[in-house]
Image (cartoon, rainbow over the protein chains, first blue to last red):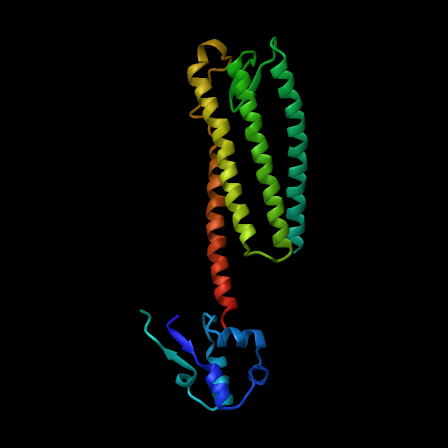
Amino acid sequence: MAIIVNLDVMLAKRKMRSNELAERIGITTANLSILKTGKAKAIRFSTLELICEILECQPGDIMEFVKEE
Amino acid sequence: MKKFNSLNAVISFFYGFYLVMIVLSVLEVSKIILNFDFKTTIKINDVEFIPNDFMSKSLVILVLISNIIFVYSIYLFKKTTSFFKKKDVFNNEVIHNLKKIGQLILISSLIKGVPLFLFYTFHISKQYVSHKHSFLNLDFPLVCLAVFFMVLAEVFSMGKQLKEENDLMI
């Protein structure tokens, strides 16, 4: 997929564990794992908003577009 | 859920009924095959004949095979509705079963219809009792049902894809 999720990088920068983030967003760790591994097909604005709020970042910090060859 | 239970009961009833009919048909067909002096007229899809030669006996066997295939498709439908009862609607087995039901119904109607048509066309002078015109002897509602099941399988396939996408929306 052309959209790369850099959530683990952001989590490392904020020194936060996946479990904690999942709990604070209100999603399961399994779903957060789907998001982190790039298997997710879509993300709700509300989820994105919560992630940005908790990690104090911009959507662009956790996602990037990479052109596929 | 209540509707599914009653529908499943109806399908189970039809399946049981057809199963009994198939057993009786097998007995009757074996009687026809073994008896070369069979005098009774039988009627299949508006075609009346006395099954006392090889061609008509083969026709009776083909009609029996067609009916067995049809009953098997009812069994598959019964099996599929049990998935619906478990609320497991969009899975590969349901899609596969629906596709198979469509194909089996189509095969069943062709196995019955085409030989009956050939029999009507080429064997008319010798055996026919009834001269009612019959075009191809295909059971058209059954062919429509077969197509419906095939389309339904495609719809379920699309539904499964949409469900997967929905499940992967975080």
